[in-house]
Amino acid sequence: ANSFCSGRFSFYGVTATPTVKIDGSAASYNPSAYASAINARLAVPAYIDFDINFVGDASGGMAYYSITAEQEPAQSYTIKVWSAILEDHEVANSSWGGYNGQEMMWIPVAYPLGSQGKILNFTGPYPQTISVAGSYTLNPALHPFSNLNVATFVQYSSGTREVLNANFMDLPDSATGIYGDETSSGSVAVLNVAPNPSTGYLSINCLLPAEETGTVQVFDITGRVVESFPADAAVSAFIEESGVYFVQLTTSTGEIIKRRLSIIR
Image (cartoon, rainbow, N blue to C red):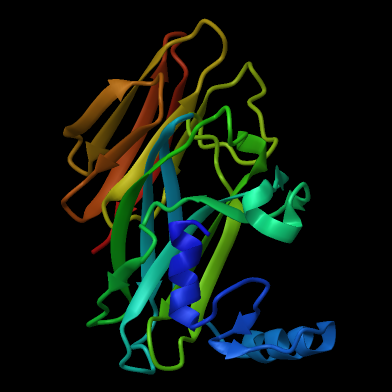
């Protein structure tokens, strides 16, 4: 197993897959038991929320996570966030034993927050947002973009091991921030700013019609320019001061697109 899977085996005290545990408890291997456990979990409101953003190129980059607790956690156990980039449709080799030659799904191939996750130290007042970030690398020849997803989950790291919330999404195109099969119309400029509101870490990316160029500027509420860069690639930024900002894309044809941005701490 890779380091991420080995870490999860150790976390749950198991030695192999398939082993299914829901909120730290073993689930019987049948659909009705799964459904019962999942429905019971979904009946409990989640008070943890996610903002997740990826910035980089086809070989990797940075992942930014903003985790918000709407209220004080019910238990005192250490809370961690884990995240893994997963690949579908990978054909297993002989190291998978009896699975050799079979098509595998949800195989972890990169771990932006490491194989052991990162600690979230919520202390209040609430709601409270904690931002963490990590790098990842990918080999495009081995891991086609269309086969990649991202699973992120916040969980007590001991005691009940309850999962407080989880997020599953397509891996956004690392150059454009576009998910799935979305495409630009080719004739209209697009400006994306995420997450918004933000705790300071954010990604700004643009799509421009063919043969156009542009400039992106970030203004504070007084009109002062705090960031400026060419609109030719996804850019990660960090804004230290809380407040309201305006992100403006100006293209070479004179088109102007603005986005309002809130930085909250």
